[in-house]
Amino acid sequence: MLVKASAKFIRLSPSRLREVMNCIRGKNVTEAQGILLNISKRAKGYIQKVLTSAIANAKARGFNSGELCISKITADSGPIWKRFKAAAFGRAAKIRKRTSHILIELDLKSKEL
Image 1 (cartoon, rainbow, N blue to C red):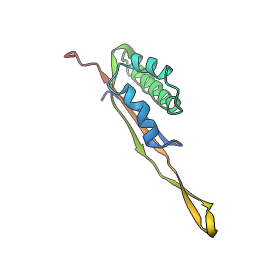
Image 2: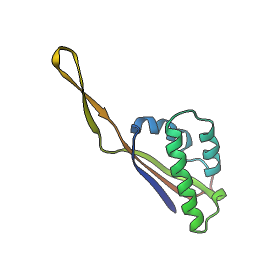
Image 3: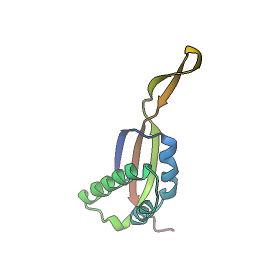
Image 4: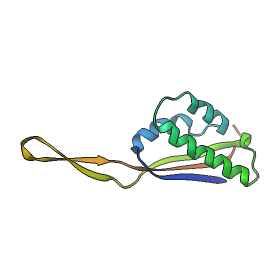
């Protein structure tokens, strides 16, 4: 782990974020950005922002973005906002609005591959 970037309290469920994250896990940074351009999911925007932040952190430390790859990318669940809506027969149905925390760690490409 050379550099990391994170975003917290994202208003999207972790499972929806993980769908997109599985496409770019372990890839080169420039390749991951190209993959994200072609994905049409809402999670793409959040992940792109965190990835560009991690690249900026790496450049600030003096690393070239061409030699970096995504070593770790996770979407953990954040606090769940609980709401209620009216249901049949005078009852209330619980609505759980899920939030998530994104973490991206970049590392140098391994030479063995």
